Length: 453
Image (cartoon, rainbow, N blue to C red):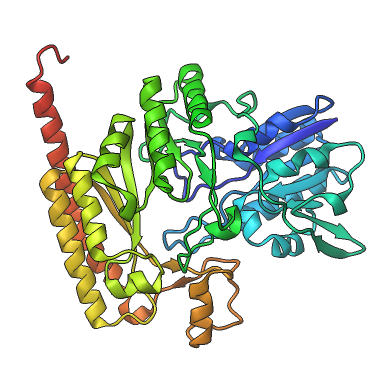
């Protein structure tokens, strides 16, 4: 029996930034010995579709597993990756009419029934955590009605099984690097860490635009800090991975778990750096210093609004003062900082935009003096069916119920769409000068350190 593991294209406009296929590499460890396994990450190939075609016709896999990680690139890009899923399934079915095609991944989990309808070549879909069900689909006696979270076909219809309780994260399959070598991912990235590390899944926050709870669950399931650092240590020692990104919705919640991970990294004297998304209200002077000692390379904040009205609308449970306070902490500990905000929000008025300008100016002032500003990233809201902000727009007649949210739809009224460009203009020079300041300071430090090459 032959099985192929396919990571579908998830980059945009030829992006050179690569992301290690964490999900597929874990599933690889669950494959029974009776299978010969073949793999391809289409993001690594200069001609991905010809590479996939070659694998299909040369190997002729009995089972093809497609990983669909991103539905679109976000950042206001009106580009859908659904074409990647559909074309891959069509290719497999055309040349291998009897091959079993199964699909999983975060993007698939957002619209599972819709994808099954749009791509009839798919035999099985996995909503949620594929580690929970993957092995059951590779046995001799598949009983689809018994497999949690499975979407399958019966008598011309689509059956969606209820999801299971969720996997114990300490029992996650070990990353199988035989089929996806981390060394292929760590060489070329200029901006982001190529290799992800999972500290937790799920999120108990209820931000009005976010779909994390629908993908990973409404509660946080935590992974043992020792298990987390074991994985980091292995990848660092065996493959030279020196920069990781925590894939958690929020790294520093709950605080005790976050601090325990930092202490474990410090205890092991791990020679690696890491990044992640942080929550401002639990980012303190103490645990920021702890994280810096543990190798924190860059802090990503997602405050998501620059004014009090927007913070309430998005259900962030934050205030402008909390956002400013977190930035001051990063300055004290000289932590490179990226700030993400959503603009042109529903129901915002002129005074709210004025408040946003004021808060942005205060943030830029804080970071420019320290030279620790990596970037300020502005977007508008990508609307998803299950998000409460989408329901609010529908109730108020600001979104047509006929709008197809499978494809990228952003709330961005034309009359005030200039606002994003206006703020980006203010941030551009601040970011450039911050980088110059940082590099100047670092060179000065090197010149003043005896023995520095």
